[in-house]
Amino acid sequence: MEKTDRAMQSQRALMGVRDLVISGEIRAGARLSEVALAEKLGISRTPLRAALARLEQEGLVEAIPSGGYAVRSFTREDVIDAIELRGVLEGMALRLAAERGVAPARMGELHRLLAELDQAQQGEVEQMDFDRYVDLNATFHEKLWGLASQTIRREIERVTSLPFASPSAFLHKQADVMAFRRSLYGAQAQHKAMVNAIELREGARAEALAREHARLARQNLEFVLDEDRSLIRRVPALSLVVG
Amino acid sequence: MEKTDRAMQSQRALMGVRDLVISGEIRAGARLSEVALAEKLGISRTPLRAALARLEQEGLVEAIPSGGYAVRSFTREDVIDAIELRGVLEGMALRLAAERGVAPARMGELHRLLAELDQAQQGEVEQMDFDRYVDLNATFHEKLWGLASQTIRREIERVTSLPFASPSAFLHKQADVMAFRRSLYGAQAQHKAMVNAIELREGARAEALAREHARLARQNLEFVLDEDRSLIRRVPALSLVVG
DNA sequence: TGAATACCAGTTGTATACATTTTGCAAGAT
DNA sequence: ATCTTGCAAAATGTATACAACTGGTATTCA
Image (cartoon, rainbow over all chains, first blue to last red; front, top):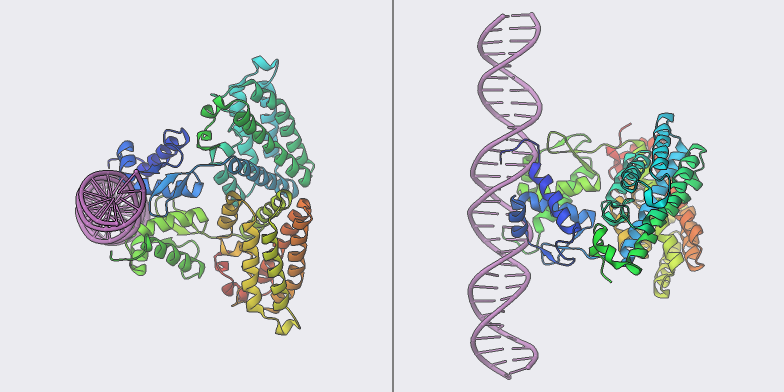
């Protein structure tokens, strides 16, 4: 090795395998051959194995009893529960933020993001700045997570490492669909209500709103699976869902 | 290697390091020297590194920016949030169980455990079968987790891998204290109410009860930290709490 | 005397070698 | 034709070798 950054190969392994799995290039259930992967990624088996062990913790990959790993496959119920789980955790984060209080500076950042989100969806549905909204939405949710303590933030980040459980799962730039665009109006209303609830120290309301907000992802999931399965390919990791 | 089980050394590494950290044999903040640990456990660095990486995910150990790992240290707030997190996740599990329904056979198992728990705390406080209650309580909670889907169960198990966040954290046989014994009466009443709520499909009540139930652990934590710090040594991993 | 530097031990991250186990396949028996 | 058995290739788990980096100490130079 000849490199600059510390633990470079490990990072390459982690991102490389994650991409291969999420993109669906390796089918769900398929065994992950260490030698083949190591060669494909141009690294040795050691950092690769570290990546596989971590991806098992993240839930993208599962250990085979006889040894090695395979790409995990998810049922519809798995995905629904992962989304519900995110809602519950975000709800907890918001409730605690409301109960314990948030520094004014941070609330200011949230309001600024709300205003930018408003701008992004200005005008008619057809001309809204979808890509910009996608980016801002991801930033907004990350800011919300930042209100929580490290312990809770860690869990949220782990759960959302399953791409279809992330708040941006169905807001990918490759999946710009009318049905998704329309869902953004309700979403933005919920964003504002969540921030308002935190300001008013209304913990229960903030929690309920976060849960209902996550429910939008579930709606979008069901739209993809039941109404337009051609979108499966465009939503990250959704190719791992069977049935 | 000459061994029987698959991935034997990795398991040994994981349990070995976990024990060293939880028991407090290695101080919070101390660097975990790989060569020293490997020699101490009689294994090579490879399975040891796998164990360290996993313990980092579990939260017991943290990566040092310049490389390697150190024993993590927890603030009182960290522990409180971990307990609260368990309460929220158990609450989610029970709510979903209530909403979606539970097979009668499983409810039967829960009732049987409730009866056994009743037996264990029969009679006067002084003569209750504390050790037996401890075991049954752990089994009961595991059965509750079993009501949830794999996704949620995984998260609960990860969170409770921090020993002080587990439902048995303050019910350790080495920490048989009057204050803890007395808390069991209220706890058992909550156990019964939780099962009842699931049977009546009262999801919100089940969730609220699970959260309040976890709050007992917080009370016990505060008792240890504020009233009888000599107990710190007897509660697993509590020596990692600073302040 | 103080600061900068060069060196050195110790440590981690990565690659590779090795032994055991698993698995796929083909041949043979029923 | 189907199931069993044996074997070889491949894959995993572990150990070890190696190179780069970190941190600290002693030396050197101003």
